[in-house]
Amino acid sequence: MPEWEFWTHHRIKAIRDVARKLRKTSTRSEQILWQALRNRQLNGLKFLRQHPIGPSIIDFYCHEKRLAVEIDGPVHRQVEVTKRDQARQELIEMYGIRFYRCSSQEVEEDLEGVLKGIQQAMEEQASP
Image (cartoon, rainbow, N blue to C red):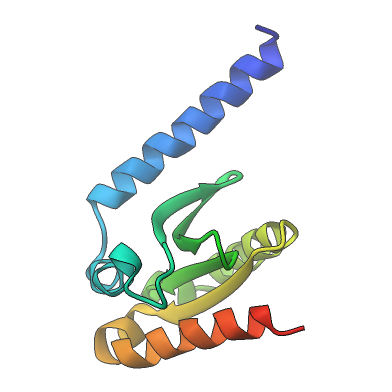
């Protein structure tokens, strides 16, 4: 196996391992939203939790609609984190994946509003 394939294989494996760990240590807001998205409860669409895309791990991802859903906690208000999130989002959007972002507070206080926002993001994506 060439050296670059060896390192690529191990990087992908490491990202998958981190994703598995994140699934086991979900935040409260991630648990709440997952209960509403799992088992095709939203428009019959399958969502994956802590899904790797390239070098990143997305909180929730719907492959059929190519929609990433990210829950931003308080740490995401910090300028350096916001800049990193934006750069990461732009990179992933180059793959044709759209984003819906909400705060952990929104999930915990207005889950129905968040679900409507996700549905709206999916409908906007389907429109020409």
